[in-house]
Amino acid sequence: MMRRFAWTIFVSLLLVEFFFVSHTAARLPPLVASHFDAGGFPNAFMTRGGYTRFMLSLGIGLPVAVVALLTLVYSRASDFKLPNRDYWLAPQRIDRTRGLLVVHGIWFGSLLVAMTCFVHWLELDAHRRVPPQLSNPWLEGGLLIFFLITVGWIIALLIAFRRPRGE
Image 1 (tube, helix red, strand yellow):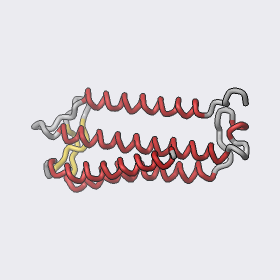
Image 2 (tube, rainbow, N blue to C red):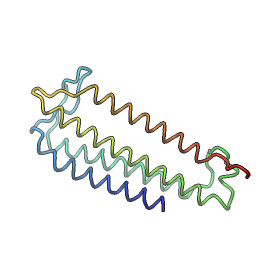
Image 3 (spheres, rainbow, N blue to C red):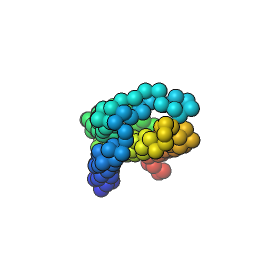
Image 4 (cartoon, one colour):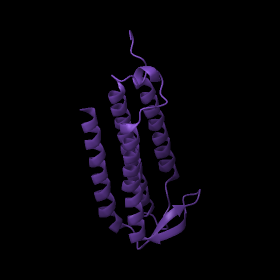
């Protein structure tokens, strides 16, 4: 049940990202500021088409590759470095352990999709100004939230592999 829900969210986010990037890229100028200095001012540019292809590749390709790799590795592996590994790798629990790891990988892929949507939103926002300027407070806040969620994801994974009481 949880695996199906995670896959549904992941695929939905991929679709949202595809439509968000492909339908908002037309708002960008023909030459898009694609890299910004520490002050938020552009110092590299690419064509709108190149930017759109790059964001779709990064925002869809990277999460799909990460989730595919984690799913492939976790669904077949029989030796993991886990807390309480003897308990969780016992023959009667290994399928559950694999499933839990796959679901966590899917959630991480979903986080990557959300982060790339956020970066594209920042890019759109930067081009509302003339000359374009990236909002460093928003970027820093987004990176902090991404980092905190990633730490929470790791903690949740560690908690999931505690040994149940009484066993």
